[in-house]
Length: 450
Image 1 (cartoon, rainbow, N blue to C red):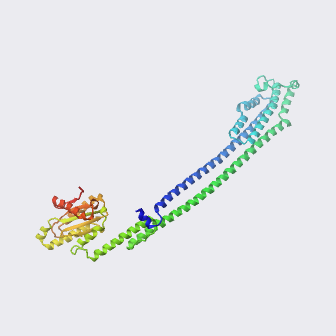
Image 2: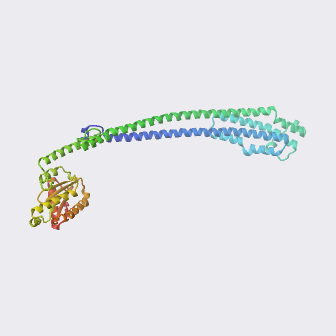
Image 3: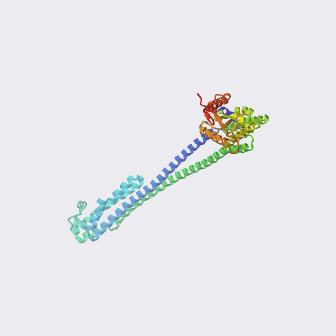
């Protein structure tokens, strides 16, 4: 078949199909890879936003902690309420929001500049705490508190400040946490914080721009793939229509009109068209011969022996049943009722055969009461169907409502796949029919290879 296909020319549908599969797999792989890259970029953008939130939150946390300490120490310096002192040291040593902010920025891998500015603010905050400690020690001394945090016990007041009165100590403590010098240090801390936040915002802006640029590029590539895929799909539709559908539609039209099929399209279809045309030509020639030689039996209108001889070479043995029908006790019927009645029975038998077989099957009268039926396009799995037809034929022949005597047939059946050559087709059917005769009337036998 492959040699025939090559000689017919045209494009092979098999190769086109392989190409389509390969192309589809490649496109799918590229789309999948591109989608994974876009997902990765999107995740990076999400990480950038989350990182910015963490870093910004950390920076603000440090500033809030510093402001909280300032507010606590100022209140303690003004009214001496030790509750504010305790809240101050709870924030400084228990809550540790400033240290946690530094840890968060380090873990989030902030830019060195942003982290450094935050560290500077933290160091300045710790420096400011020394001033705050001294102010709180003055308040402790002025109030005469004996129980106070360990950090304040390490602070030593100058001899001059020790000599101050309680009111003077309170006034000095208040001045230390409210004067210009104190707020200058606070502003310095805020400047460092501002620089840190600016660095964080700038780093986030750069990362987002880079991710957005990559995202845009990947989307552009994905659009190109989609365009290519659309073009490929249109090409597949076109080539399928051009090589397969269009030739088939034309072929169907040609078959309906009885014309030869144009041998165009794919290699496979050209091969089918070429084979059909050869079969059509052979069939037409044989049909002409049948008509020319008057191959029909005059009494029954069926193919005669000459018709049988022409039908036998053209049937596909591998898909054909041959059935040899022989009338039971037909001679006795002729002797009893006369030849005219015998002829009517033959006509009835021919009519019953035509009724029970398809127009595609070939029915031949090859002798006095011998008939052959070629049941075509049937494999060996249809024995039950064949048996059913024969049973129905004998039932209809037994119907005497037409005034004719009861008649039956014995049948020998052989499938062409069991026959070595066409010349033995009839011989095998005859053997099977002989076995039916030995079994009695209205019997049928399938020939089995020994």
